[in-house]
Image 1 (tube, rainbow, N blue to C red):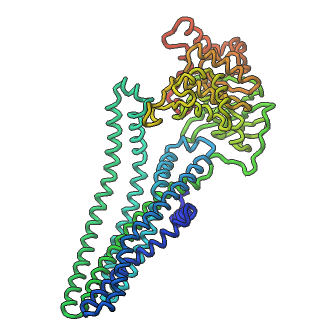
Image 2: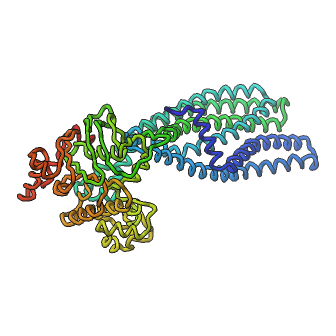
Image 3: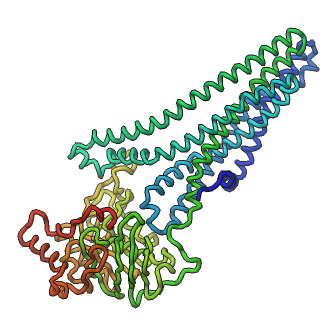
Length: 617
C-alpha cells in the first residue's frame, strides 16, 4: 500500500532530524536570514536614496548606509554558508537513507520479491530516489521557507506603495502553480513508465562492457546488435522525456510572458507616479525591488514546490520498500530448531511461483533421513531446484508442509534454519573480491587458516597460491588499483571450486545441499571433488542434485522427479532392477560414454519443455 503524501513528508523530516540535527537547524536558521536579507537590503536602499534626495548629512546617512553594507554582505555570504550546511545535511541523509533502504531489502528472507519484475522496478526507483529525493525534499523545503519569508517581506513592502499590485501579481502566479504541479506528476508517471526501458538499457550496456560477455559478443558478432537495442531503449526514453519537456516549455513560456507583462506595467506605473510627485525616488527603488522580489519568490515557491511534489512522488517508492512487510512471515516467537536427529519431511507439498504459473511440485511426499544422502534426479523443469528453495525456505509451500524433526519450517526463523545449511548451487556466485574473501563469505567469523583449509579440501589451494598475490589477489577484471594491472579472471571450473570451498567453510551445519557441484569440472577434477565431498559429508544429511547419474549412484536414496511428482525412489540397484525411468536415463548416459555419442551422455537429462523451462528451477 502506497504511503500517503503527509506520511512521506513526515518520513523525510524525521530523516533530516535523525541524520544531522545541527545541520538541519543551521540550514533552517540560515534560510530565515537568507529570506530576510533581500527585503532588508531593499528597505535600506530606499532609506539611503530618500536621505540623499533630501540632502541629509553624513550623521543621518551613516546608520542606513552601514545597515545596507551589512545586508549586502549577508546577501553575498549567507548562500555559501547555507550551501555548506545543506551539503552536510545531504551527505548525512544519504548515508542514513541507504542504511534504511538496504536494511529493508535484507528484511525479506525469501526470493519472491527478487524474482518479480515489478519489485525490481520499485527497488530501482527507490534506490535512485533515495539518492536524490531526500535532498530535493529537504533542500526544497528550506528554499520554499526562505522564499516565503522573502515573499512576506516584499508583499508588505509592495502593499505600502501600491496594494493593488500585490493582488495582480498573486493572481498572475496562480496558473503557474497549477501547471507546475501537473508537470511534476506527469514527470513521475513518465519515470515509472520508462523504468523497464532503463533497466533494459543498463542490461544491454552491461553486456557490451562486462568481461564475462565479451567473448560471445565478439565471437557471434553481437556488438552492433546489442548497441542498436540499447540505443532503441534510449530513444524511447528520450521520446517520453521530450514530450514532457515540450509541454513544460509551452506552459512555462506563457507564464513567463505574463509575469513580464505584469512587471512592465508595475514599473511604468511607478515611473509615472514618481514623475507626478505621488511617490519618492526611494519608493520607486523599493517598489521595483519588491515587484522583482515578489515575482522571484513566487517563482521559487512554485518551482520548488513542483520539484518537492515530484520528489515526494518518487520518494513514495522508497517508503513503499521500507514499509513493506517481509515476503515470508517470520513468527514473533519462532520455534527453536533442534540439531537434526530424525530427519526432514515433506508432506503433500504443492508449489507454483504464482497463479499464472503451472504447478512445479504436485503433492510431493518425501522423508530425508538424518545422516543420509538423498539424490534428486530428473529432466530440467522436473522441480529439483524448486524443492531445494523450499528446503532453504526461500519460499513456503502453497499447500502441505515441510518439517525439521517435527518442527514446521514456517514456525522457525529463516536465519536460524539457514545457519544450519551449507550449499553449493548450480548458479553459484563469483564475487568481484579477493580469493580469500570469496571463500570467507561462507563464514565471516572464520580466520585465514580455516580459509586455506577449505581451499585445500576443495582442491583450489594450489591454484590460489599461484596467483600474483595469492589469497589477496583480486578476482575481477573490473576492480583493482588503478595504477596496477587488472585482477585475475578464473576459469569456470576454478570458480566452482571456490564456491565449493565457500560451502566447506561451514563446519557445523546439519544439512548440506549440493546442486550440480561438479558441472563445470573435467572428469579427473570431478572425481577429486566428489571424493572431497564424501569425506566432508561424513554423517551430515545431504541432498545431491546432478545430471551425471554416475555421481549419485552411491546415495542412500535416489528420488526421480517427473513433472513435479515423485515417479520413483530407491537405491541405485533397486531402481535399475525396477527398469523404470531412472534405469532408462542411466542406461542412456552409460551408452553415451561407451559409444562416444556426439550429443553427450547427459543429453537425456537436459531436455525440457517450453512450459517448464523458466518455471521449473
